[in-house]
Image (cartoon, rainbow, N blue to C red; front, side, top):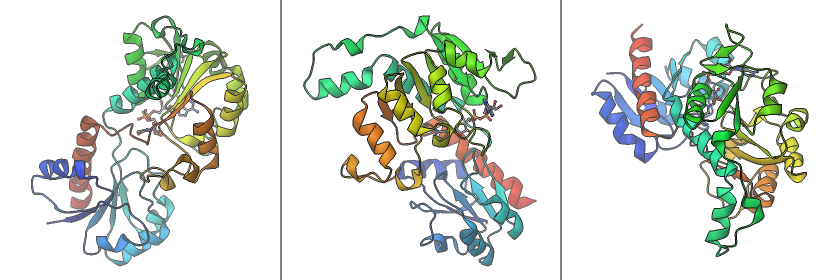
Length: 325
Ligand code: NAD
């Protein structure tokens, strides 16, 4: 029986791993993320399975190779946490989960968007502190008569577009990779400046590609956006220039920033800080301390039951097809 060590398995995930295994694999489920200290718990395994915030750097991969581990699986779409050139050099096969329920992230993006759009974040903070006055700043538009711009019209972007379209919202998309210049996955396409100028809320669903989507939304793009429009980022932190977001919020040019992703996630998500002052990112701390219209979730976009089941099922399929060949 092949032995798989899975890192970063949360307690709530354990029954799903066992239920979907059908006794095919000898599972070593490790709650900790992969790091230099605990790599050796995989000794004796045939393959390892990673979560997104496990970092498989060259050193870890060299150790795996030394221990006869020739397979690194990740239960994520992205592989930016794995040193792919090193894996290739060492002859380690890497396999990922190319897709899982896109509604997991799309629903969270919509929730962040609506929370800011209807000022619910600020309202909740105030009512829970005993302040029930209706502030003028709570005044809002309605989403059904507004326009949402989706940047990156792939699986998640298309799912969010369908959710907004169901509420009667006008949806526009921008995606340079489309065989049809007029639409992608049912979303009418416009160029980026037009989308930024017309949207009341902009939602990002692009992959992080160095030199292409890094800093895709910076000062210039923020200035093109409608005054007080909202920006939602469930993609990757580096797609947005946070310094430019801070400036746009200071000048009330941006109506709010909602994100499920932050810089240096490995040192932030998965940790509990006594106060915001202990956050290792001064930029994030400043945003969260000073702007009630900034809302951050701890990278939970894909933390839903259907998405988890898809990830584990595809990981088992990856074990079967990759290790068997
Ligand atoms: P996808 O590959 O289906 O879609 C990405 C789309 O972005 C593609 O249509 C592509 O053409 C487009 N694109 C590429 N470069 C672009 C650019 N410069 N401008 C505009 N569009 C561009 O991917 P997906 O499954 O929809 O996932 C999108 C991203 O969401 C992932 O890459 C990942 O970073 C992020 N994600 C976040 C979570 C979370 O938990 N928050 C979970 C899964 C994925």
